[in-house]
Length: 246
Image (cartoon, rainbow, N blue to C red; front, side):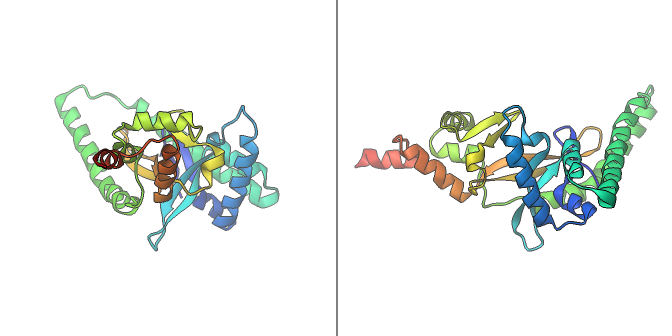
């Protein structure tokens, strides 16, 4: 069990949390969805401060939903628990987050190389660390990609647009909104199966393992966008050309 790095913050996979608290993952997912619904009712709070939607690939090759829990998310879950299990979970996640904090602080104490031999040794050590991480990166490349999903850029190209233009159109129609650096579906559409968050594994400059979540559209989501724009007589370029030929 380990912490992941999601856009600069430490998070825990909901599958690991389920094991830590002795609960089936599907039941924890059900609870988290309830928590999110309650949180979203307050305009002053964002559920992503606690629970970040994500996906993972099962042994059968299926892309399934899960959540990434921030420290606040772990605290939220812990506060819902009582007795021995609640205390044990609190002790575990607090210990994990504190360990990560210490690991982040340690590199700042390292001395900057002052000579060429020291710099060469440092470069060699970093190259060795990257080589050790390569199998993990290759695994994410092969296992965490879903060819059935499409990026906003790919869908936008059908209309001769950029991703920025399509996002603007969807935002204008109250389908998605900007949360930090990312576009997120409004709650009304969140459970329709239009999108999935596809993890993207990357190596940070300090050698730590990180994960970005990319919002991608399912085929159902692509059809939803098509029908939505068609109502305003906006059609893909190929259809526009066909209409001109007629």
